[in-house]
Image (tube, rainbow, N blue to C red; front, side, top):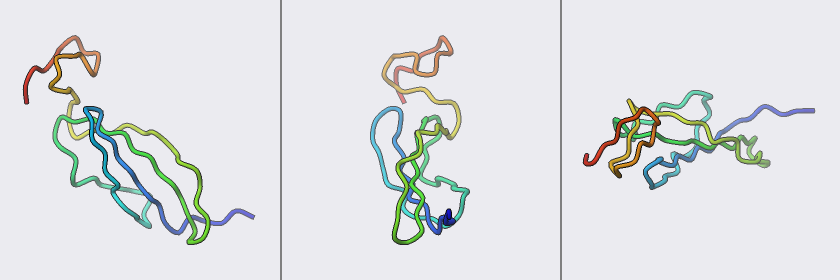
Length: 85
């Protein structure tokens, strides 16, 4: 018998470096209010019922606008680079 998840643990990692645990939620929809415009993020999720947790599901990409790191590389394969923030 499958149990329905009661909570989800969400972790985000920015494509340009840095990561953060966004914490627990009971919703299947998450709005990342800490996301910076132009940054691409990768999200991993674990589902649990209070005693048992699933393995990590992900990564799933998301962004707050067009993603491009300020490292001089074409991170989103659009033929353009960003040299500074």
